[in-house]
Image 1: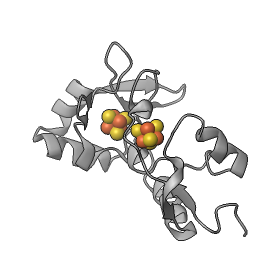
Image 2: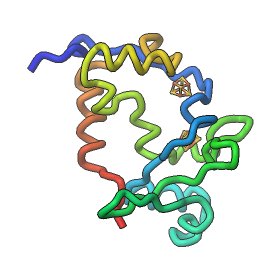
Image 3: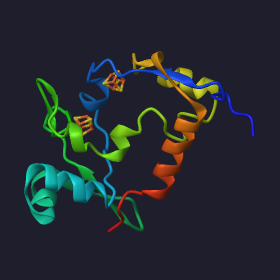
Image 4: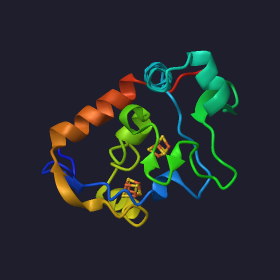
Length: 144
Ligand code: SF4
Ligand code: SF4
């Protein structure tokens, strides 16, 4: 099937931090995230859940998200960037190659109004983009 990103898409994060701060939002965690992140901080999974996570009621199920600070910044955002960068959640690592952003060229360009890295920098091939979509379908946020 032909996709608008068949020839790849340009994206390089400028580390502006916009997507990690200011506006309220959710960083949902997968089972793998809940393995990697506690390991990075050398604490147990339960301690990590207690200290850095909150549950989000989705109606018939609940998801686990990172906490935010009072100003809506992600709990891991600090002056020098993401404290969890090496083990940052899949949701963060796979951005901006998310299904709803890749629905059309318009949705991609619309996202670029918020993220200065979109449409610039490194060229990511269609295969790489498809791989991110596949990983996100396979590694779903954990449901409680
Ligand atoms: S908004 Fe885009 S450029 Fe800024 S930190 Fe997020 S991904 Fe990087
Ligand atoms: S975990 Fe790191 S990359 Fe993800 S939103 Fe928080 S500060 Fe940003």
